[in-house]
Image 1 (tube, rainbow, N blue to C red):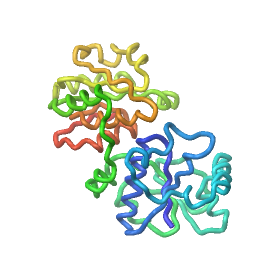
Image 2: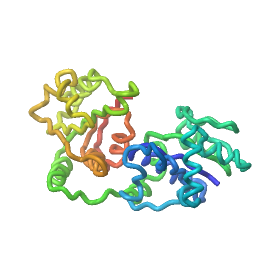
Image 3: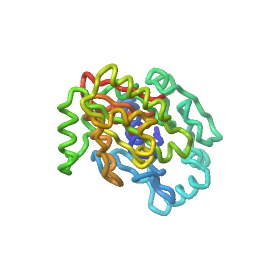
Image 4: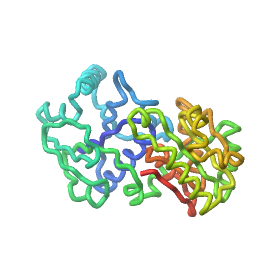
Length: 289
């Protein structure tokens, strides 16, 4: 049994799914997604989205248990007893393979730390493991990009305004997405500074001179207040604000960002996934690491 932890918003889910599928392809065996984070009193963002958006149907831990048993597991998880610990406490042999940077897991059994690369994970693959991490970056999907890009296909864009934007982004040689994420990243102190965006915009102007910049954000009021600090004031005549894709339609922003030739983005799984989906051979990205 190999379980892969999944949580968070769509960006997290995509990278964890890529790792999950990489593990299945690498081992030639089916794995199980631990989707219990999407049950209970604190479900993140729009919940589990991979089936709704992409139609992928893989083994999910929640489907192995009747509702009452699942509810008990979720309650225990919310009290701090994670799924891997619950499996161990039930007398089952299991160990944790933990991505080195993913520190927020409590487990009393054997934990093996691993770098987020296929080469490192290959050395520790074993039966009866719980894989805990976020696996950001393109290392895993680069091993089999055609599989991922075939399985994860966005729905057709419905809204006329978004279709117009999609066509323009696709046709422009240097269309550039600017993603300014605030929300939970700002609360945690992880938000990218305005200085970085100002420098990134200056670099884009110097290197590829975009026809338009397309601004994506979860806090446009903050962006408007800091236009000059961000460097957006200098390019306002070529700035297009992409607003209106919210709630269960928020994924459309990722879809549109993926159609741009280039991206100026934070180290957010949402915008990193947009880069992964971009199929333009000449794409360039500036990422605030």
